[in-house]
Length: 349
Image 1 (cartoon, rainbow, N blue to C red):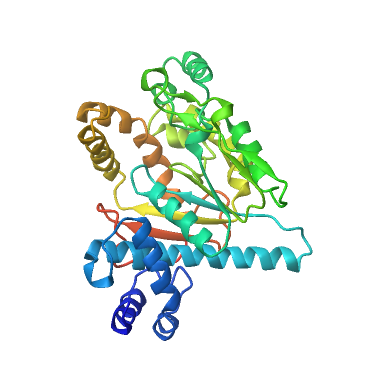
Image 2: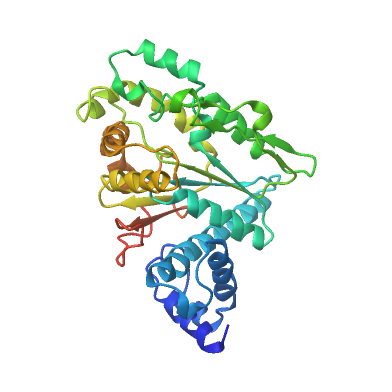
């Protein structure tokens, strides 16, 4: 890496649209770009990108230096504040739980994977957990569907009510108690290929086990942090079947969202982007010779989520997640190509 390349990286990063909401200063980046250069190279290697600044496409430059790295530095800042705050209050150490609420297909899994890798590179142990791993067993999902035969939103996994909330709570409780070298936490896994593609919980002996001290828990999901409406009729106006979903959603706030110390909300101008993103994923799977959904199946699949997006995204974007605290939530808006938009509307709700 030449001095010229380092200077170019610093200048490009200093012009990124996320600096303000991520608590970063352009002049600091310009005067000391070393970490941006180092971590940018780590990301480029992990993502399999072309080596060297000049070889990166504009899309990848934005992804690495104006999206992933600012978010990483925000997580790093939140971790430092979390540790200082607990120490100041004479509280015992506890991992930071960082919640990520983002629509399906928006790239949250890749983002989380890279955040874990960057944190590891800097000596921080991070564990990623998805709400998808807390889906009900196939048998319990079938029971939920049979008890609500007229509600098409709970016939299959996806919406609130189709998760084992107690399992999620127990897992988060164990992870936030992983403060010694002797700690061991089994992370549930869900196998979406089971039961003819309808999915089932993976056998417990296949769950990965996290051992030792955990510093950060990255907790992600498409509906994480959704605020249930006080009046079921409010969401029923969007879709009558949402009344039941809204009732079931209320449990998630105390059982899951209350664990989250800081939030990242991925905002999209139009949730219908999900249709395109899902179809792109299925097309890639088919190209690799794997089973994938047809366009009609994709539309039917995504249709299950649209009522919840329509009902809950406005309040998520306007007021933040259900347990958001001032100074501990950042909103990042993406366009249809999953690139940060140049004009971010607000640092936080």
